[in-house]
Structure formats: structure tokens, C-alpha cells
Length: 293
Picture (cartoon, rainbow, N blue to C red):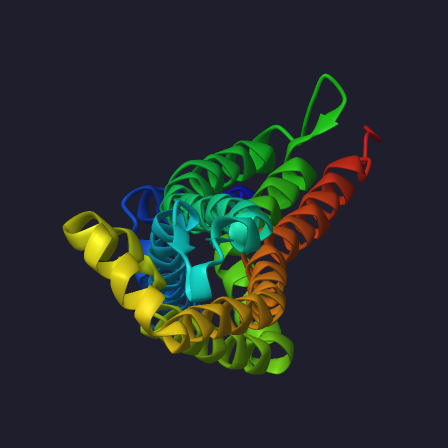
């Protein structure tokens, strides 16, 4: 009788945990512990990284717009009576492809971060509200019916409860690991690359080559006459094109560095952490329960 009384109390306590879990009270309790800071860090990291990705994406698309304008520029001049055709677009053809690829990577990074934010909310709902409450219900039944068809309900309830914790905190864990990796290994590379990219953006604009077609359409004959009379302007245009060509290799390096940063930070590292957690969950599920009568 005393043993049954103890089972009743334990079963009621477990059912109370199941009810509190379903009503999100258990999660509210966790929010008051150090795990709450875990969630806040994960949410803060995702928000900051999304802002950083959107900002970088805007810079890249802005440069791509300038390059698209400059690509169609063909400067026709006649210094000292000799015709010269200067094609700026040929210099920028390789970079335009690189910018397009980088734009897609940034788009995928933003999508990945957005999915992680949604999965964090799903983890709260699925991990505690569904799986933890169900595991507690299974545990309460296991106290009275230890085995059903050879399955030890208590062991499976413990396993399901542990899996629910993994699901609940897997995305915050991904975010925290990604944040620490970024600050330890990637932040310096990102800061240097984005600052250099902004500088390149300004320098390309300062060449004035993006406005060349506009100037020619407004007064093409006058421009030709002026260039014919002053060959120094032709030399200036040549120097701008050569300057632009020199900047292309630097721009490509900065762009590739940023591609590496965002691919690692928002795609590869999250996938690796999720793979490790999935293997852990699989390991938990592979543990054979006690089937002894």
C-alpha cells in the first residue's frame, strides 16, 4: 500500500510536469536560469548576423549596379587625329560574374539565418510543449505498466525527454557555436574585407566612368572636339581604366574573403553542429531499452 501511495505521488508529479510543459511554464522556468541567457545570446546573434548579411548584400548589389553601368561604356576619342576605342566593360567582365555569385551566397545566407530563427521557435514548441509533455505522460504510465510488448516505457520516456531537450536547445547551440567561431576566427577577416570593399566602391564611383555614357549622350560631338584639342584628357581616361583594372584583383580578393566568412558562418558551421546533434539524438535512440520482465 505504501509502495502504491508513492507511485501515485510520483505519477501526479510527473503529470503536473507534463501539464506545465504543455502550458509553456517549464520553458518560462528555464528562461529564468542560465539557459535563458543561452536563448538570448542565440537570438541576438541571429539578429545581428541577419543585419550584417543584409548590409553586405546591399553593398555588393550596389557595386554590381555600378559595374553594370560601366560595362556598357565605350570611350571613343581621337587624340592627334588617331582614333582610339577604349572598352571599360572588358575590364569588368570577370568581376561581374563574381558579384553575381556572391549575391546568391548572401541571399542563401539570409535565408539560412531566417530558417534558423523559425526553427528556434519550432524547437520551443516541439521540444517542450509536445515531446517533453508526451515523455512525462509516458513515464507516468511506465510506473504502473513498466513494459508493454517488451518495451520498457520508463527508459523510452527518459530517452524522449533527453531528445526533447536537444531539440529545444539545438538552434541556440548552433547560434552560440557560430558566434564564438565568428569572433575567434572570422570577425577580423570580415571587418577588413568589408572596409576594403566600401573603399573600392567609393574609388570606382570617383573614377566617373559610370557617368561617361551620360556625358557623351548629352554632347558627344563637343566631347570629341574637346578630347581632340586636349589629348591630356585621353591620357586621364586611360589612367582611370588602368586604375580600375588594378582595383579588380583587390576587389576579387575581398569578395572571396567575404564569401568564405558567410559560407562558414551561416551554412557550414550550422550544418556541422546540427549533424553532430542529430548523431547524438540517433545514439540516444539506438540505446536498447531493458526488456527483462
